[in-house]
Image (cartoon, rainbow, N blue to C red; front, side, top):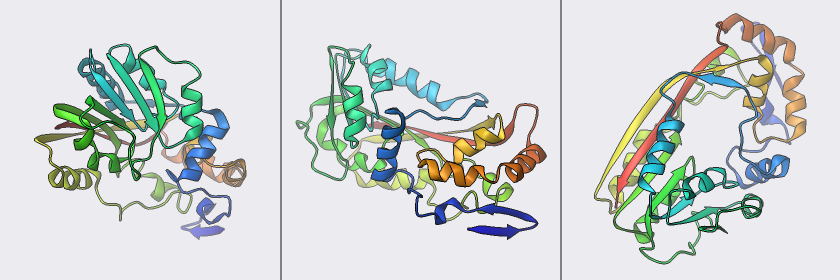
Length: 266
């Protein structure tokens, strides 16, 4: 699992039997097992504009006194925040562990259910005024015209395909090359033009995230993985530190931070 590239030798964690494919059911189960929350474990600083903050403000504005669905809600951290503004809020996620955690404490106007975007959804037709997809699955867009009222709204936030694109050059084999990924804007446009939506907007946000330390880089790479993967990657800490120092600025290691905010009218 060790490769040599321009004098750099790093292990490829994806070749390990312990590697979990990101966003797979096993990967989500591992995250919920580790801490019952979908929270990034690394420290970083992000230049403005920060799409997450813009998205949260947009959601809070449009959920006021509405019946809202938060699909892909994880452990419900943001669902409960949005629920302060909503008339009624339903959080849905495919992970039973996340939903169990979310249900431990919740506002009176909020409920949580297990639901998968590729299965039959347990919602009444035209029940919601607004649907929220905060880094949730894009496959849910196909179903939402059935469950969001005519004249309703869908708000989405999605990571871009260029996220951390520099890392595959700086840390060969430790990070994959994502050049073959379908651009997220193209992917979303295809979904929206096929579905019976009245109109849609896709707003890209491109900025820089600065990872604070080599350990944060390891956490970034190993997010959602088992301890064996952390141990495997950490065994290259000396080489990782040398590369990190070579490319870091006073703020940290600069990598692309890319998000797309979608505004879809049903």
